[in-house]
Length: 121
Length: 121
Image 1 (cartoon, rainbow over the protein chains, first blue to last red):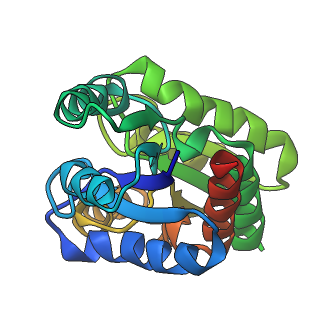
Image 2 (image 1 turned 180 degrees about the horizontal axis):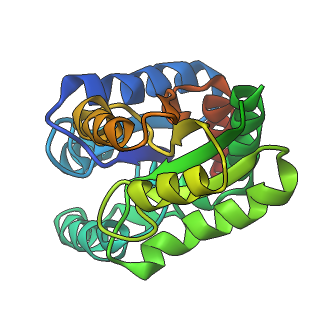
């Protein structure tokens, strides 16, 4: 098993919107031990499809997808699973898992508490 | 000065999308000292307009708006400032400030690092 992690953001045609996600990816890479790639669900590159293709070519066969979303709405319940199903058929040897969005994690809630405390004083 | 904090989420007609934001608001309230309200930019209630009206009636005259957004795209650069301008005209005695989105804070990046480390092992 050769595992990598994809950080999945929504995507936007606005490069100013993309910038903080790219900054996040750059900040994360040296701080984590896993192979990490940022991908966008739609509207800009690198798309999820592009990143899955590239990681698969690099020899990764187990891809966890961590959504940089606050909550699971239609995108994470319908659109992304449909993308993953199509990718599964295209790359039958690659195992793709969609994780809970970051907004569901306790570390995230704690961060918001800290930010609220900071900005309220 | 009587200050309150509005957590501003995008909004969605999908109640399953709203649920984690409501959970976040409930978890935050007992943990912070500031008067806190969740509001949605669009697509569901309570809207930003509803919450500003209610807090203004409660006597709050200084409202900080903390966007539960990863990044500032068109919504935070154009749509929300236009909403705030309209609210400013309607409530001239209330001072409204749009803060940086939570995604721009270091506490947020640290939380993502923790989540990545957790989910990679």
